[in-house]
Image (cartoon, rainbow, N blue to C red; front, side, top):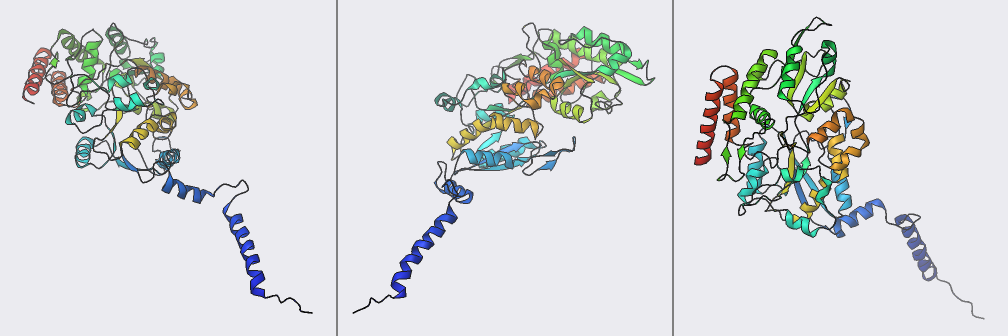
Length: 463
């Protein structure tokens, strides 16, 4: 009888291959049968919808890539890697890189960057200066065709405030979406009011109310025996905005027009003259040094000696007050409004798409992401910025600071819009310089404002 012959190679090799394939499959899948995180990440990078596309985003201010310690609160804050990871997760295959710069010198640096095409998206407070240069992408076409996006998410007037003229348009259009919110308001120290027995400021105080209460609280504090001052305001480089708001409270205005060839200044109007005379009177109740940004060193400290502060910004008050436990001590009143409820400087930063971007569609997706609740909460909770979206009113992190944040968000809804088109141009500095000249007695109120009107108009004609 012939016995079968078994060769090891012919029998074990197929068996070994079957076992090996089982081992490989077992190593490459989880119990649910999905790919591992590393393999999925690789797949997203290579085969995702946005594969091969990278956008560079320029940001200005107190942003950090990595986690750091907040110098004011001492708390650990998360870096921009949080936004990077979430964006790249939502847009498989896409990459985002950040270019960070400080506020100091940002205008010149931004101009150089956009001229050389270094970024796809820009944080652009000076959007009114760049849109006419034909270096930005108009956003209305993206808004019109995107069913998943609505301008209704933003706080009232924020979108209108950033509308500007383009290179070939005589109508204001959207060239940037609100990203960082900002506002100005009147702040006051409730503790000093209590010690002097003076009623707190009304929500919308008049010039007469401000002066009357500032006068009452100037002198020796009846409880502490310390010298108090009724008011403080900055009288140097940004005083133009202060005076213009005072004029708005009298139903005046800075002027008219938005296009440079249509602008007419009203710097020497009766409302401006009356407003500057009012500031001159207030100096009697203020510490020395307002024209050199001095005299307010104790403001927002437990030893504060100033009752009222004009033209305060949220970046200078909200975080500092809560960090020092002063949130119950500080009150906020709205800046001066005209009879229509409008007044105050429009401020903040929009984000815009560079016209020379090679990935404009992905850049638009970044704009949507940057104005989503996820990114806006990051701006507020980690970077210390002010959100520009209505939903912020309902965030737990805002409600925890509601004594100061809710009035700030309210102030953002009623500034003068469209914003002052000359805000970052020479007329601002001309007017501020002449206000300083009046405050120091170098020129009379009338002559100072006549000079501001004349020089600003000449600059406009020769630009």
